[in-house]
Image 1 (cartoon, helix red, strand yellow):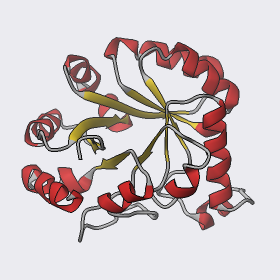
Image 2 (cartoon, rainbow, N blue to C red):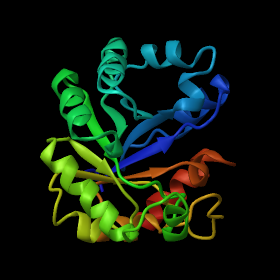
Image 3 (tube, rainbow, N blue to C red):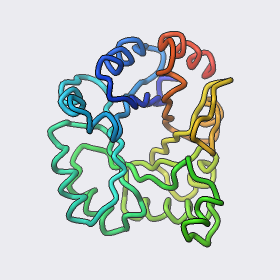
Image 4 (cartoon, rainbow, N blue to C red):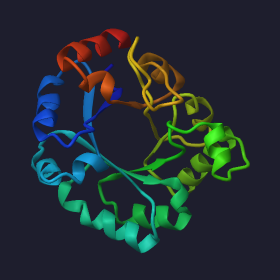
Length: 224
């Protein structure tokens, strides 16, 4: 199980809660990283706290999607945090992806395909005429062409994405047995995601809501 990466989503502005999540999720049975998104990094003390973390896998999930210069400047502005993973939207275009990769240094650039909160009907409503599968394949090809380090996609898409993208594939939309799916529409269980070919998975509420230690044990049991 150690080769698999588990990213715990710290989706809160409560610094005490984040410290509790990190403390109570410690384990030597699986490889753990911590994902911080817009909510936490934009909070009053969020960015400063991230800068103090040592010997942790840090995943910054900002899903950058802007002009080339703005994205490049944003990546440079984050360098002091010495983060391991940073997300950008593949839909920002090939030039932006290539330029971001050039300035990323040791930070792995992660291309986000299509959000797991969207399904085919949602994509159609915003003007997409291709199927969800075809869109994700195009995004995977673009990420490969830009030489990105990893991509994010739904666990339901990993099998066919793997044909076009050979590096790390990280999947959100993961729930432990019996947990509510919340705002996600394309979800699965941890073991199934890894079986499909994911190299890392993102877990939020299934770990962070309730007793974190107990939820970590549930995860470890599910992965056996």
